[in-house]
Length: 216
Image 1 (tube, rainbow, N blue to C red):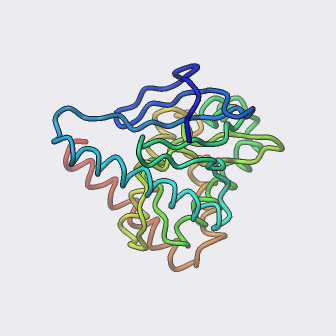
Image 2: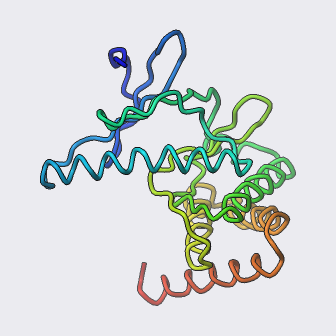
């Protein structure tokens, strides 16, 4: 099935480029995994192919877990490309600091609950930041960019996921980072078991401590 010509590059990434275009009358995002010249051509293609299929599968599983993700219209394995729904709305990164404190806490609690739904189904996002969350219509929170996602129920990987979220808050939303992360954990704990939540929060602290010792 032929794809329409690229209309506009919206993001250039290390692994893939994102293009905004019209596709059969729909406004879509096309994610194209780009070749890497430092890899053997066949190995490079297999890596890009498998990652394309994997990302589509994990996004579908996330949706089944109750976490909103863009609809995937086409998986073009040959071109290592995904054609996805364009979600209209601001990223959480652009909105969070502007909200009143109570609204910010409510939003973060909802984010935490969605993270909990992913982890409960054995999905690790791998890049949890407010840049990878979009506020769609009716304040629906969409999770995007599952390029680093994987399947795991390990507490360590769940802890790393939440640690990344905590660091993103401290970097981008520093004045509100503490209240935001506290609300995220509250939402998270409302979805997973209390024991699991306690274990993951403990692991987040341990990971942060390791970072301080290593100077990162």
